[in-house]
Amino acid sequence: MPGLVSKPQELRSRWSARIGDCVQSLGWSHDGRLLAAASISGPIHVFDAQSGLEIVSFPGHGFGASSLSWHPREPTFASAGQDGKLRIWDLNRPGECLALEAGAAWADRVAWSPSGAYLASAAGRKLRVWTPAGEMLRDYPAHSSTIADIAWRPNTDELSSASYGQVQFWSPERDEPLKKFEWKGSMLRLAWSPNGQALATGNQDSTVHFWFVQTGKDLQMWGYPAKIRELAWDAKSRYLATGGSSSIVVWDCSGKGPANTKPLTLQFHDKLLSQLTFQPRGPLLASGCGGGIVALWHVGRKDQALAVEWLDDAVSQLVWSPDEKTLAAGDESGIIRLFQAPNP
Picture 1: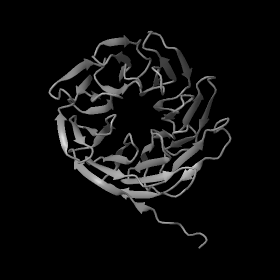
Picture 2: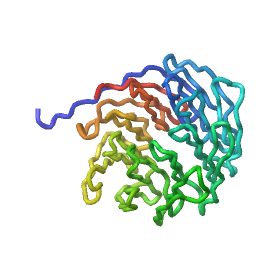
Picture 3: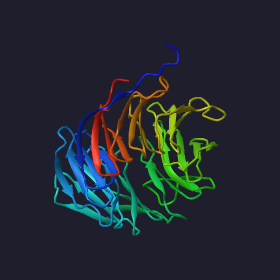
Picture 4: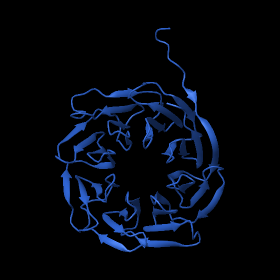
């Protein structure tokens, strides 16, 4: 029948668990066997991904945990917190951890390099790089303002950092930045395209800024009603999904890029978006919002949600498993749920 809109299917839940308060960070081990969840109050819990049983918990960080990152090949993860510490946890030695000074009262970001040879941390204006054994390799010159985000360029050991007015690029081999891109504005999030050719930032002034890294050519997308913290690239580096409203705005970045093009708009959520993430290799995009809705989309093929589910509270985390068959979701009430991905 013309005009008929198909109803999305319900996501199939595998298991759920509760960690006490808001799920601040969520991450899968490299082999997909373990799922770690950091709570906003500080403790970190590790679950068996198949059964949902908690296998170990750690005290985490005093005053609250900020983020966690798994090593790309080892049963080890790092976490950062509001106690100013960077901690490295080894699942082979669950009673021990390395506690490192991140350089400020509040450590906000931590990220392993794709090779696993380096660990980066951001705390206030301080950016540091460490070895897996906890040796500090680089204590870079202080940024001119608080570091909002850090990200490793895909398949390289090149690190990027965002602060007010600039994105800087760093090597673990030298103290000074390799290069920098300047733009007068407050950047909140960094997102590399998987091919490493483009870098996008979500910004405080409700814009998305976009650079072609090789040439430095940049452009800006505006018209969003709220600041933008949600950015996600698809596996082929073609689509950039953005938040900043209750609708998902998707830019086609193929060819000469999204300049002077009309984006695709995906609508189902009833509150501001809080999470966006594409499958690492597949076509599905997962989205979450402040109203507790989790939705899956096949961008470029359908403009309707494939599957949806409602959590108990606002969606705070969404992370795909390494094999892309499972989506882990966390909400602000502290509940974690695992969903089976449907066929796209």
